[in-house]
Image 1 (cartoon, one colour):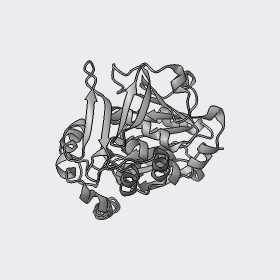
Image 2 (cartoon, one colour; image 1 turned 90 degrees about the vertical axis):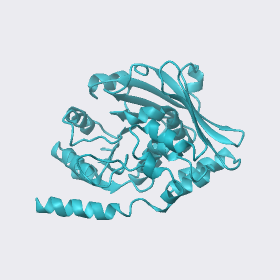
Image 3 (cartoon, helix red, strand yellow; image 1 turned 45 degrees about the horizontal axis):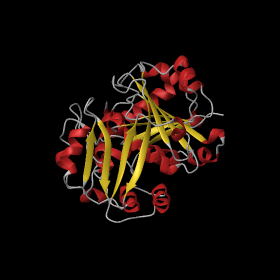
Length: 329
């Protein structure tokens, strides 16, 4: 209708200014956007930014990902600066990552989670929590996140004194990860690079140290009571590029989330129109107006690739817009 046309016209106009000045330092952005998969895009861009991947020979997915840095740095200062970052420019500077590096392709999920917790005013309460000194994050409908699963180790830098436990679940979890538990490790290699790797053989003690990030992956068709009882209650629920309005399979999951107390639900989508329609789904399923987090652009840490859509020309990128629910008392 006419109102919808006007709304989409505004989205196209405003989208022209979303790229931000830092994208000029990413010479690979335009041609990498045409690649079929995220790994293909990363490979296409990697030659310009000092990035390396090491693959699992058996399963064919990245076990190790590393980025060159320009100088050595004390990791404690690095973590504080990273936590205060207002976008890719500041984050790259805080980590001394080369400006042309495609590190943002691999790190945007971790940084989006932290950034949205800050914007939703939930981060301070998580840091102040004392429950076992652990923060449990449930990642729903996982897909692209699993491509660079090791890079979720970056989350450990933002929760000092806490360990982070991730449960990655959804119908697209592949065979080689289903039911697997692992430690996600981040290390600075001689002041020359930052590396992330998966460790499937870590001792239990290593999983229970401050700053540690562990993950368990489960193939699950739905997020229901039985699954919640099996994996434990979360402190945060996050769904990347969820498509709430596009898939009716989300309805039982949202109904369960609406019953939970004290748990923020943060979700993203590729374009503003999809996010607006997703927010309407939350309202239609009974979300209280006082708990709704309105649709906003993820200006800080959306993925630095344009998503090319076959069915529309709206400005789109992974984690482009976000919305959700505040914790309900």
